Image (cartoon, rainbow, N blue to C red; front, side, top):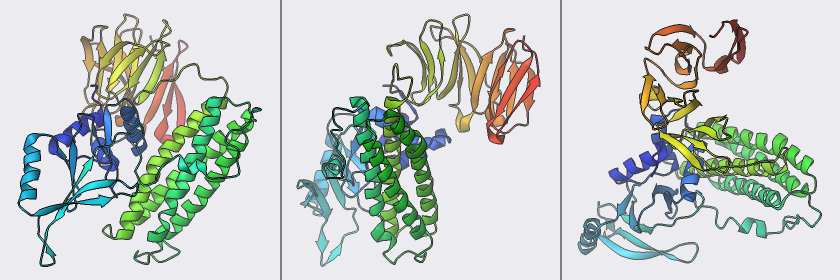
Length: 479
């Protein structure tokens, strides 16, 4: 199995006995790569779930947990420490039996909202008091194809109600069937945002928050409530524009995608405002759970909007591949594509049909360049705290050159005609040129987050500075 930051951490957490939810996993992943956002982790997990490498563990009234896929087994959920632990072998099963036989816990059943019953274990009572021993819930694994928080019910039900729009779209539609289906997914996602925001109404107005009504979380709740309504109405207009691809593109690109981005920023602001409240309050827990669900749904809605936009934009997609964290694809003379898959810890060469014809495993690659000698120059940021390395490997994977002296977060490399290597050492705010023997032959620094560079035979050398919102040129011939 290919190990990425996320799958590696899943394995580590399982060795420790506890299964993480999405936010716990994100916090752990950021320790290895601070630039990873929650949405990026979510999307990578979604791909792993669809590939069958990762499974979900759903617990009643709890955020969805994730684990590496393996044979059927069960889990304990601890009411006290909120950890989830495996029951996977005879030893742990015997431990469970011993706990039950001791009378410290009793087995019962709890009805779920869908009518099924969870096996249930709770602390035995003596004289109306509970023993100090943990209470455990035993929950079965449920694997699905999409990572959700398990608080929305059946997602298809939302489209079953009459919203005034014809979801068959009619025979005169000019958008492709795939596009029409994508429009429906956008509408479903927008309506789901409203459903999740609605869950915050009662806890926000419970009277238990420190902030008074009209301030703090209350303000952001009403902002999100209004924006969710606007997004839903805009998504309805998208469905109504099914016979007008140009109008549909305008709605998707100019209204929906920016609207979702703004919604996400406001949800983040509400989470920040909530930081002033007591995290142990039931209302704060409920609002936080809803915000977690919004993070996931926003990422899903962004994916749906991107898929829908691809169906109505020109030129149409020639090919599309679901891959983990692709960065800086390069078209090769053969027609293949060389791309760094940062979330899959490898660089791959893909044919136009998507077949992997070459790959090299390396931690968090950010850019790869195929050299004239057939070797591949790779930058990776997998060292502690983003420490980086530039490596040249042969087609057989043999390392024939590398440089790592003080590099921090590389986002660009180029092999120069004289054999030197030019490196965008972004974390250190500089560009450096390194000779084959490791000697630094030129540097240009004191710039905040250089975003890239290019040069031409006429001596022009252009540098983009992402962190300073500027781009400038210098006169420097590259030979």
